[in-house]
Length: 156
Image (cartoon, rainbow, N blue to C red; front, side, top):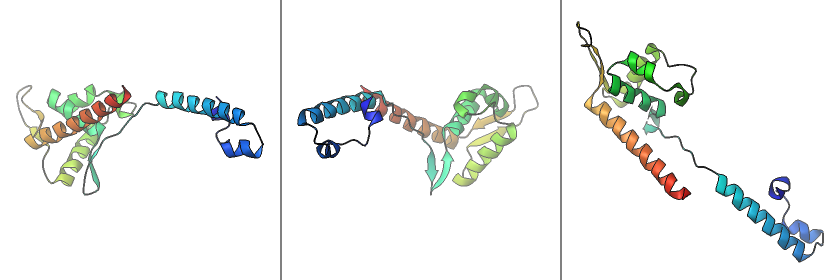
């Protein structure tokens, strides 16, 4: 790839070398063709997170945790079901980490996003998202979908 090997070579270089205009044209055509081919192979990626007054509130991992709590009704079950490759970790986070994360988000927002349910019978206890927690998760997922759809349109 000529453009990759000689990225600093320009028309001015060829002028200084008194190269023919035909050689310059050939070089420029090759350079532009290789550049276009390279640009066509680029794939846009993005990371989304929500902030409040410059402080991070919720990112991909937090949204996955909230979605999993919503589906399983338990932090422990939610942690076991998380796809670790999406979290960039070797295993699921600990219960203590997850609970601390949720409390930190609630402190920053000044609102509850999860509620503990106590129960003496099997299946009566657990954790659920509050109405605000569901709205926060829904907003994050909507924004993520809109960004992904926007990037998908641009690639066509």
